[in-house]
Amino acid sequence: MTLEDLVGCNVTEKKMDNVSQALEELLVAAQRQDCLTVGVYESAKLMNVDPDSVVLCVLAADEEDEDDIALQIHFTLIQAFCCDIDINILRVSGMGRLAQVLGEPDTVDSNGNEPKDLHCILVTSPHVDDLKCQALKEVGSFCKESRCKNQWIPSLALQER
Image 1 (spheres, rainbow, N blue to C red):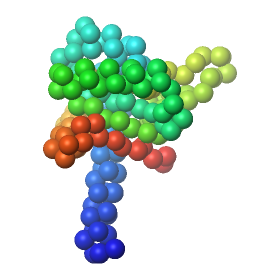
Image 2: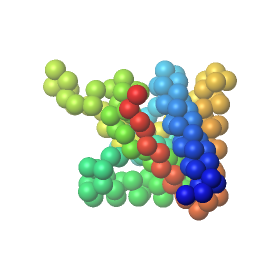
Image 3: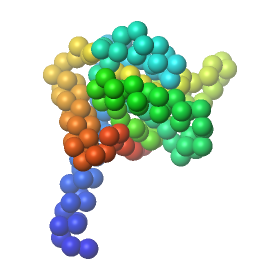
Image 4: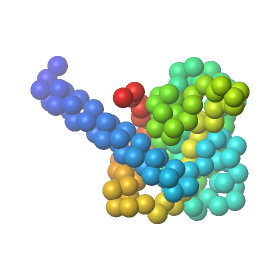
């Protein structure tokens, strides 16, 4: 391994950590301002009614979800729609961390309530302070850079903290 390889890996790893942190900040800020739509069906309904309000689509799945054909079909349709109308898309893994960031239980609670479907999350036109807008810019920039590298749907792993 060359020095360039090592430095490049460190830079890429740091960039991914920064984008991951920015995504978490953005989701928390958008949730506080009621600018999140959570769930595959809820997201599809919103994109049908008001697609111009959507600024980011987060598609989340872990390895065990890769064999869920219905979920993959939903993802494919949502991705196609988002690409058609220029909505930034980000695929993430780490459903447990995503639930933790959003304050959602990732299992059935003591009252028998099912956890929310976190497989698709839409961020709609947030009115957030400058720090959080910076988070949206950073995530958007990452998506744009990925498209320039012909990676139309960038992936990100959310790490437990």
